Image (cartoon, rainbow, N blue to C red; front, side):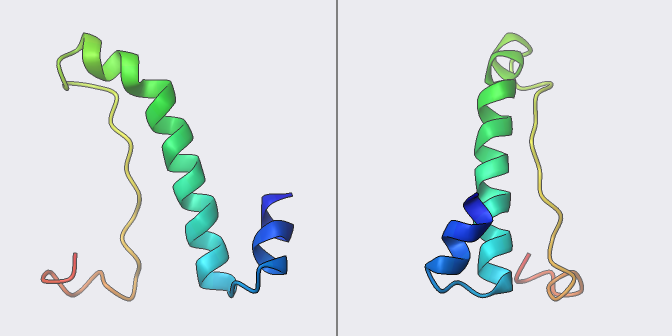
Length: 61
């Protein structure tokens, strides 16, 4: 459903991916927030892989 909404809004593949990834990250952060608090930041992290286009550029990552 979200993919269709993003495509209908005229987004290209990269922007559709970014919208979906950000939505997933927000959901994961919400799910792990209590664990993060309970462990004083020792656990409950959420991450996203760096784009291969930027992987070799430390200044942009």
